[in-house]
Each structure stands twice: as structure tokens, then as C-alpha cells.
Image (cartoon, rainbow, N blue to C red):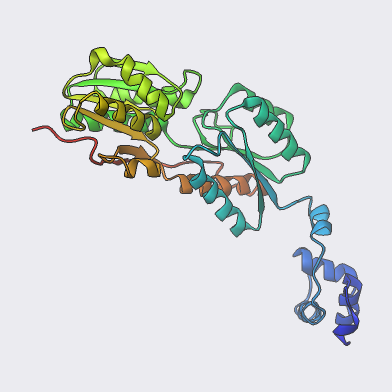
Length: 334
């Protein structure tokens, strides 16, 4: 058959050329059911000769799959999220999925609207990267059949598919580092009180420094809140003070404010943040931090989501352990 005469070959054209039924061609395309080796070879040759391309829509309807996953992040402008999303997209592409990205903009109502939108579009699964697991998230799980993975998440429920980033352990590593460097007094700049991840980092930090005598102030997890926090901490600012901050942005703001007051970093005051965003590598001094590999969190989240979608018995939980990244903003006292 002259394939030039077939502008839009159909499954019937493939079946006719291969000398089989359309049902047999469907089994080969859908990779389901038995087809003899010789018939399979003829069908594959016919598909190649005709340049036949199965309708993705038809395949999706038959398989009840759209090969589409949704990702909802808390705030895409926050430097924490691009690497995480990159990891998700990389793994999704490898699995043959397309991705829709939605920005929650720190608004649970907006996040809910995006969740409803993705579920209505018949997304095969949804990854929610909102930082902290909230009561509202149980509603998603109860009201929708769409597979969901929370990443990173502090949820303790074994029935909720998730990637844990161990915020308490992150805080502990930061506090322990300051104590081991020889800092004698401690303060902590915490994120919003309604974010359980922020509170877990705070509690881990206090545990890590080994004393409950830690001055704690609260802010909005950005550079400006770090600057304001130093003003609130003026009464405790002194030499050999180690300060932890809820993330690198807050730590940078606090460090700059302390330097403007005349304190030397790290000689008088040491600073450590979390997340290892690029900003911390370009400050003077460079910022010590604790991180989890965000790209790895994203890749693992997509792997977990595929397990849930396929119901293949694979793991539905995983952990990405934090690591300490010491830099110039902390030093060892002799």
C-alpha cells in the first residue's frame, strides 16, 4: 500500500495492512491481552509504514487516564519551590506525564480552587507542596478520588501519601551546630505560628542547643521580618550569641540588620538559616544553613504519586534527610 495515499491512517488501515482485526491492533497499542509474535510483528510494521499515531484522547478515555498531573505550590515566588518543581517535572516527564503548575499564593482558599480545578480536569494525580499539612487537606482526601501526595509535609498520618522533610531534625542540626561552635547564648526567629513546619524547626533548634533559655520571636519568613526580629532582640544581642532563623531569607535580613548595628558576624553573633537557597551563597559572610535536597523531594514525590496512581503496592511514604551546610556566618570559638 502506498502510504502517501493515506493522509490520516486509521486503526482499520493498520488492521487491513497487517491482516488482523482492529481488536488485535488495539491489544498491541494498549499493551493488553495476548497477541502472537508474528501478528505483533506485522502490526508494528504496518504502524511504521503508515506512520499511524493513536489518538491520545481515545487512549486516555479507554485507559481512564489523562497522563496529566497537577502541582500546587504555596508560593512560586519563594526561592524554595523552583528546585522542587523542577524535580517533579523531570520525573513526571520520564514517566510520560504532562504537568500543570498552580500557585497558591499563601492562600488556602485559592489552593482549594486549584485543587477542584485539577480534579475536574481529571488529572491522574495531584502533588500539594504547601509546606504544612492543614486540616483542610483531609477534606481533599475525603471528597476526591484523585490520588494526592503532600511534599514536603509534616503530616504524621500513615494513611496520607507524603514525603517528609524532617523539620524537627533540621532545627536540631542547626541548634547543635551553633552549640558545637561554642556559642553560649541563643535566639531563634520563627515563622508564622500557624505553620507547623515552622514550629517544628523552632522546637528542634531549642532541643539542639541543649537549653530552654532561648529568646524566640515570630515573623513572616522573609528578609524584612528578619530585620524587624533583630530590633525585637536588641536586649539579648551580645557576643557569642547564636541565632537561628526559620529560613535563609529571614536569616539574611537579620544578619544584615545586626551588621548595621555594629556587630561582627560570626565573631560576635553567628547566624544559621534553612533551605540553602542561592541567596545565602552571595552574602558577606556566606550563610550557614540546613537543607534538604529539594530537587530530590520533587522527584520522590512524583515517584510516590505514580505508585498511588498505579496501585502497584509501591511505597507511599518517603523521607529526604536534612544535611548541614556550614559556611562563614558561624565559627568555632577556641
